Image 1 (cartoon, rainbow, N blue to C red):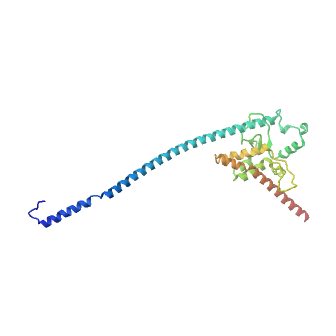
Image 2 (tube, rainbow, N blue to C red; image 1 turned 30 degrees about the vertical axis):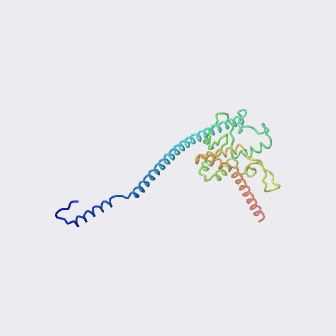
Image 3 (cartoon, rainbow, N blue to C red; image 1 turned 45 degrees about the horizontal axis):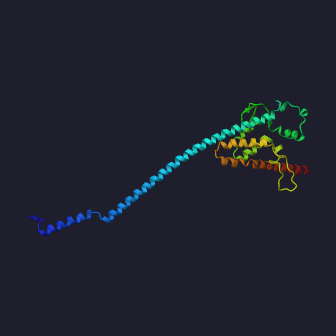
Length: 271
């Protein structure tokens, strides 16, 4: 190292030492470098795993979307098949009930001489819901004609009451009100859902069961109502399974109300 003429050896030595110290500070220690390198490689590996997981998740979402689309198509097909099946049942029931094209409103009951139980059943239900046996083609459901609404299979109810029923909240109240519209309270109080006597009373006498045909109409109306809210077949089946329970509760309420009315009349007569 050459010494300049204007600087002393001590000053030159101090300047050289400072330069060497600055170079040492600029160099990264090898241990720190290797640690940073390993950290960088680990982060790259984690990023690859994350990208693989994202790709796997994307494929799963695509598959689920396809399944949901297929499920929606199956639900639509099932609804179409159910509607076709319902129409076929309507055709068969109307053909079996129409006979030789005779309208019940014009038939003389004495000329037919029906069985006593059948005649009693028809007379009880005649004032609450009307049965119109007609030949094919089958009439559509929920059509309004002469102030009455067709519920299917020849069952008609009052149009104004039907429209009021559509704003009813809850399956229970809807089913109970619909049962009153179809059978009437006078029929319901003397019937049971299944015709089996209750086990709560040992001497209970079984009451005649409600018409299975009209029970199916109640279920169909409730199904059409629920289908507007959900397409979950499990939920629909679960809610429909409570129809008998709702009607049984309504029958019990009617009988309880009748007994309370009889008690009030008896108390009034004693006074």
